[in-house]
Every structure is written in structure tokens, then in C-alpha cells.
Figure 1: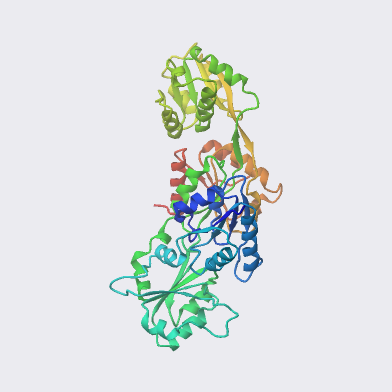
Figure 2: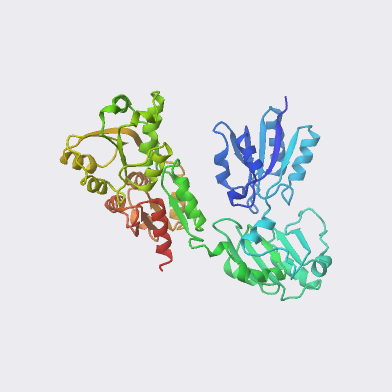
Length: 506
């Protein structure tokens, strides 16, 4: 029984530009065969059982021939599997998707085409260049900058391009840039025609070089610009001077490591990415239930005996309520209990379960909760504190000094992981990382454990360290890191604001 093949356009690089249908295809894949230009972020949407195969072609490195790729797609489909062929940009715009479709037709294998946003349109848009504009041109051409090398002569009508097209976009043409500009000028296009080269368009590494037909080759060489890049030729390039928006973002060009657990990293990654940063996820911890659930279960069974329920993190809220529900209870079990939280994010998560916290301290650390309780008579009151196994002891100790009976219960544990550590270590050695963020002492300790025991100062040379708060910063310093940023507001929003202020002081 034959499977089915979907030729899916992955978009130009920004994973947010994948189509809804393209994303649905990735999620249902039995086999995912992807290219060099497809964003690795998209691979995370594939199921854990999916077979993920890289067949990318990078510049002159064609490790996998097109014939091999065609045979691989056919083989997997003939095994009755759903095959997603994920191609950068659009599969039918210089993506050889037509050739792959012909093979599937010959093999009588059912297929669908899922168009993608081509870099020919997206990269200029992110560079602030509209390809058409009523004041400049109403004609547009897409041209390969790298024709089939087996052809005896070019089948591009250079004369018509030079004299009859207002905007020309060349794909895969950086290596042939001098020949392209020479041919256009030799066929009548004025030497002062504006040109732009957009490298890694729509990604955090986007870089644009502008010039004219007679200067752009030298300018590209001077900046060391290499593929992948698209070439835009035409007077619309002049609009970039006022329309440039993407590269104006405050963290553009900065590479920032996020060490937070993968389950919680999305908010920080999104905020930093929206500010222009390239985010490298290197989760150093994952959050798991405790080995022994009996203490938490006993506390849940005796909830009516507690006067206060206190949460110090979003994780504490999540694991407590998950276990509460698993024990066939609901929020009505908390009807006579007061609540306290540390931080607005924890308060918001608690409110998701229909509970508004009675105490939210002014600052987001245990000492502030103690200060807030100083206005309460808690002598003899019972307080349930479900939190991380590794949490600091300041909070329960100080509350007990005030006369409270505190049950400090392990609701979850921070477990060390090494996901993507090799990639980050390689980038550190290459000096291509600008900053590392720490959102807890656990992330600091586990990240340090990933690094060589010797030579930390040398490895971290030129790398800034950003901490979500003073406790985390102290841990980082104790482990040998120089801390450059400590957020005044101990939240993800506060951390991002501090990072932005660090690079762009007001």
C-alpha cells in the first residue's frame, strides 16, 4: 500500500512564515525530509515517532544528489508512509519541486503541493524593499542566478531583462554577481541602477548591502557577503532608505543563549526574537515530578487543615493542580484557604485556575513574601508550600520564626539535561555568541556543568551574562561568571528590558 507525499514550502527562514497547512503537514509526518534552508524550529512540530532526515545542499556541498533524494522519497512512500518533503521557500520557485513531482507521477504515488512564502518576495519585504510600486514599476521578474551548469548556453533573455523589466530578483546568484551585473549593463541597463543584496533574509542574521550595478560587486566583496542571499535590481531599492524596519530592531544581529527549560523558554525566546535577536535554545533543566509523591498527596488529602497555600513559581502551580486533579479533586477543595504568590507570572497562572492571590509582594523574591506576611498574624497558622526540591530555605525558615507551621513539600524537581549543548559550545569557541541568559540558579549550575572545567574565562571572553535577579546573579558569580546584567524586575519582561537597555542605553 502506497503512502502519500506532500511537497511543502517551509518559507524563507522566519518560522512564523510557514503556512497553516504546511505546519499541519509537519505534525502528521511519518517521515520528514528537509533542506538546508528550512528553519530547524519547524522540526520541533514533528511527532516524536517521526523519522527526520536531512538532505540539505549548502553552496557547493551537494552531499545528497537530487537522484538520491528522489529515490528516498519514493522508497518511504512505497512503504505506506506519509512523507513530508520540506523545502526552503516555495517548492516550485527554483526549488526543484517540479522535478520531484514528476518522479512521483511516474511512480504513481499520490502527492500534494503545499506552497510556501518564497524568499524572492519575503527577503526584500523584510529589507524594506517593495518589489512593485506605482511610482517606480509594475513589472517584476524572478531569475535564477545559478543556471543548470550542464547547459551549453544561457536561456535567459538578458536584453529583455535589461530593457523591459522594472524589478529583477535573482536567486542563488551571489557567486555570479559580477557576471550578472556585467550582462545587464552590456545589454543597456544604466550602471547607476540601484541594487540590493539581502543575506539570510527574514532571519535574525539578515544583512543587507546596497549599491548600484557598477559598484555592488565590489561592495559585496568588501563586506565578505556570502550565500545564501538574493539580489534585487531596480529603482524600488531606493525605498529601503525610509522603509527599512526589520534591521532597525534593537537586538538585531545579537546571538543570545536561552538556558531555561524547553517547556518554559517560549516566552523569553519570543520576546528576544521580536527584538531582533537570534535565540539559541540550550535548555539546561527539565521540570519533572518528584520521585516520591506521597508527601504532596498527603498534603492534598488534608487541604482543609491549611490556612495558607503559597506558590513561588509557575511550575509549583502547575504541578500542584495537576496532582490535585489526578486525585479526583478540583478547586473547590481550596475554598477556605488564603493564597500567596511570588511574581506576576505566578499570580496569572494561579488566576487561570480561578483563584486570585491574596498576597502578591512588591518584589519577586522570598524575602519580599516574608515582609508582606509581617502585616498578617500567622502565629499558629498552617502554610502549605509546594515548590521545587532544590528551593532556597529562606522562606520557610523566616515564616517559622513568625510562628507559622510550614509544610515545605516537593512538588517538582529540576533535572539536568544537555540538549543542544554541543552546538552552543561550538558557537562559544567560534566567538559567535553575544550573551547567555540565566533565569534561575539551577540554570546557572547546570550550564556551568556543560562547560570544560578549565578555561572558563577564555571561553566566555566577549560574552555578556544576563541574570533575572540578584540570587541567580550571585550563583553565577560564585561559579566564575562575570555578570553584566541583573534585571531590576525579576521577570521575563524585566530581563528583556534590561538586555535592551544594556545594548541601547537611554
